[in-house]
Image: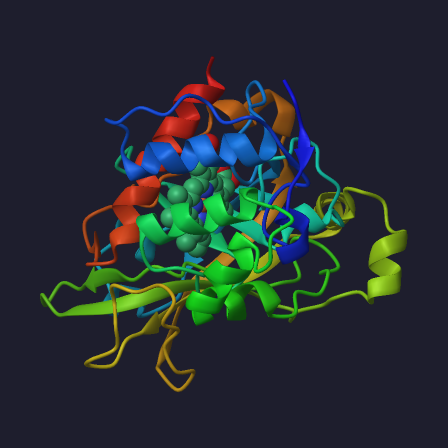
Length: 328
Ligand code: HEM
């Protein structure tokens, strides 16, 4: 396979190498085309996620705050603590990527799987930015395609795309300092969900997970000098001393706030409902387990529903496609 340098690193969005694309099929959905394009940008690697390929697994527990069930009847928001399996990750599709690799674009991920007392599961799949560069699957495909189309001509496709999509430009140019560990930065669900309580009151909200001890980052010079997997290693070391704690929150929309557009961040004065504590207690054997694990944004429980945000179901389709490919 022939690799070529692509424009990805320049916009801090994707891989530094681009592989030849797989053959296209007229029947393919946008979600499948996006997974194809991830594989084109980063190469297709066995047993590896198409995006957020490099991760670290932990277990822990979620303890609901008093009154959490005022927002939603979701099983984990009431009663005894719920076990969780948490995967932290670096963005992009490069396996074993160093934390400092510009292809990550400074994007970190946190996926939380609640193992519910009724045998079910609920998944939260979040990133370290509040907001997303695009609102639709078509635009995400357009962005990833522009990233891969580096050429000598000016303006380059990625510059054209960012020029026409101010939210994407803001996303890729926002400062993204290196955290001390995966446990020292906030994560955002970005897409809106609907939360319904026992009285039948429904509200739209967006997940947030924030580190209890506050955010902590290192300087650019320190980041450059660190070990390649310091984000995971520092967290693994910390949990041998004491649980690493986060608060689980939901930012609740005001009437009229857009729920179907992940580029539209809601104002910070919207109420933040505190739902409880996620305590990370133990590192797991990531290599042994992570390929069997699948987090899906639509994996929900009664009391939480999807909104009109078109990305939610599209993401689930793309994640399932990627999961299928990584079983081969
Ligand atoms: C058009 C929108 C998106 C598409 C098509 C997409 C696509 C993907 C794909 C294909 C994977 C690999 C899944 C797997 O193999 O299990 C993935 C993983 C991931 N995505 Fe997305 N993504 C999108 C938006 C988002 C958003 C909005 C967030 C967070 C707010 C996000 C966070 C993550 C995280 C954290 C992972 C890693 C999950 C894990 O640890 O297993 N993605 N994404």
